[in-house]
Amino acid sequence: MQDSIGRRIKSARIDKSLTQDELARILNVTRGAVANWEHNRSFPPAKNFPNLASVLGVSASYLQMESDYPYINEIPLPEDFKRIPIIATVKCGTDGLAFEEDGGYINVENKHGEDLRAFRCKGDSMVNEGIYDGDVAIVRIQDTVESGELAIVVIGGDEGTLKRVRYQNDAIILEAANPNYPARVFTGIDRAIVHIVGKVIETRRKWQ
Image (cartoon, rainbow, N blue to C red; front, side, top):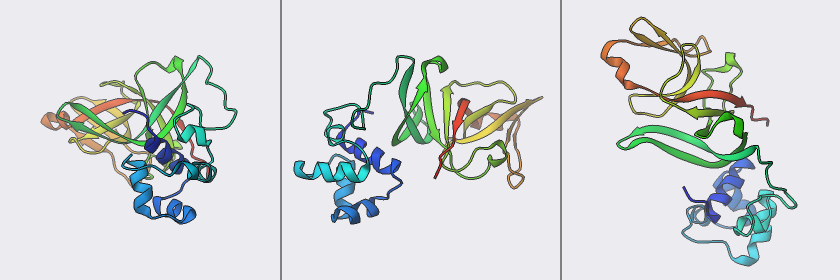
């Protein structure tokens, strides 16, 4: 998905943990105006960019697509790092995986490989692995993992989930790391509804 003024506004808003309503109140505009900005249906007046940038904690030149770096005096990433999008949801579509980005980005080392995504973790099913709601999982996109590895998995084509994958005889077992969530076991033809999206290679904590 192409970068744009709207995507940058949305990404900066999310990074500041602001809702569209909260940003609208701060700027004394309507929520609809903020939504239109983020969907590139309209843009803030040029004279308002400095105030918007100040509220969002980024530079006005970044929001106006005049710079690729969000912060004043920010230097380019070292050559051994790159920026990848954070994914809000993933589903199985008719043409393969359908990713929906949440507007944010994260920096990762090139050594992790080429086909990488970052996934925003939801819920508390993996808390005993030290993975909490709002954390970010760095994932290498691949359709298989070894038994015992953490993976992003789509079940039945619906929204993906992070689980530990195990293979036992004919079964695929998806294990949570919270006793409130029993393991899910898929055998026989039910194995076909389990789709491995990628291997989790790193998680990062979202500190409040």
